[in-house]
Every structure is written in C-alpha cells, then in structure tokens.
Amino acid sequence: MTLLLGQTVPDFTQDSTHGPIRFHEWIGDKWAVLFSHPKDFTPVCTTELGEVAKLQEEWEKRNVKVIALSVDSVEDHKKWIADIEETQKADIWYPILGDPDMKVSKLYGMIHPDAAANITVRAVFVIDPNKKLRLTITYPPSTGRDFREILRAIDSLQLTDNYKVATPVNWKDGDDCIIVPSLTDKAEMEKLFPKGWKEIKPYLRVTPQPNRQG
Image 1 (tube, helix red, strand yellow):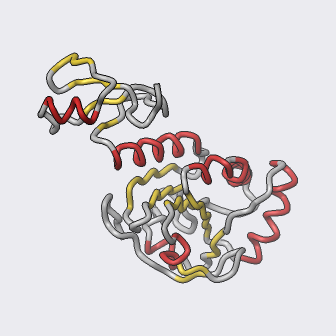
Image 2: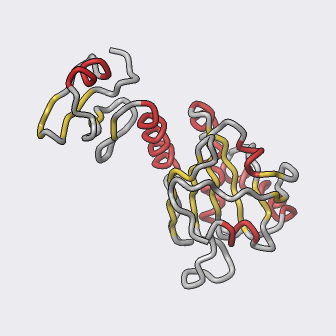
C-alpha cells in the first residue's frame, strides 16, 4: 500500500510491549511518529531506539508520541529492550509494536522486497492529531536515522500549520522564515508580520519567525 501525504493513515489494532494498541485511539489528540526498524538484536537499530528514548523531553515539548515497530514478536522486543537499555544508557519508555504477521508493515508499505524481502526498511511516518500523514522518510536498512532532523521537520510542520510562512533550506527553530507566495495583500501582511520583512524578490520575502518574541 502506498500512503500519500494528507491522507488519513490506516487504523489497526496490534500487540505491543505496552499491551494491545488501537492506533488512532492511541494517538488521541497528539502528533505521532511511527518508525520501523529492520530487526531486533541488530546494532544500528539498538542505537536508534536508544536515541529516540533519550529525546523524550523533545518529543513531549512538541506534543508528539513515538512508537516503534519491527516484524519481530513482542516477546523478542521485551528481551531486546534489556540490551538497548544496558548499551545505550536509556530507558525505553515508549511502546514497540510486534508485527510477526507483517500486518502493519504491509498496511503501511514498510516491506520493500527489492531492498529486503523479509524485514522492514527504516520508515518514518509523522502523523498529525487529525490522523493525517504529514511526512514520510525511508532509509535503507544499512543507514541509521538522524532523529533530530525529524524533530526539526516537526517544528516546521507545526509552525507552518499556524502561520502563513514556509521554512527555507537548513531552517531551524528560531531562524527566519519565508512568507508564502500566495499572500500578497500588504495590509494583511503588516498585520500578520508586525516585525516586518525583507523582499529579496516578489516571491521571496523573509521575515523573523512569527511565534518568537523579540
């Protein structure tokens, strides 16, 4: 199945290290990051799940819940968690879905047969409180993810949902933004952007991040 940005993500009920989870109900009124890893008891995955755990305050600051998945069983996950916590010095506080029947993996298109036929690739799905898919990233099994980049992307999504701006290349929270080209009424712009803006081209207008003080 191919999921497209803006679509409602499929609901499912699946067992996890925190017990059965009905996905849409679990998300509730928060943002969510569903990420798959290829296999338990493997080195790159061990570092990734540890890093996600260490970023707990960053997820909470953004009203984001995180949940992992692989095609291993919940019993294997629980055994592996001890290794992650020992080697990465991190408490795995979030749930890990068991998916030995590949139900969720196939539902979300995480199995790429030409890359790895029997395991999930490193897929990331960022989902908003309306259960809409807002961002996807797919890495091959050999490449570990940068979860701070995922946090940066969520910062952009949450900012641009509430203000008529877009975020330029290499943007980070606190940097200048770009006024969306569809906004052309100067009076409205002055109301929305009291800090002013710099017009480099008619379609390229830079303004301080509107939800920052100063």
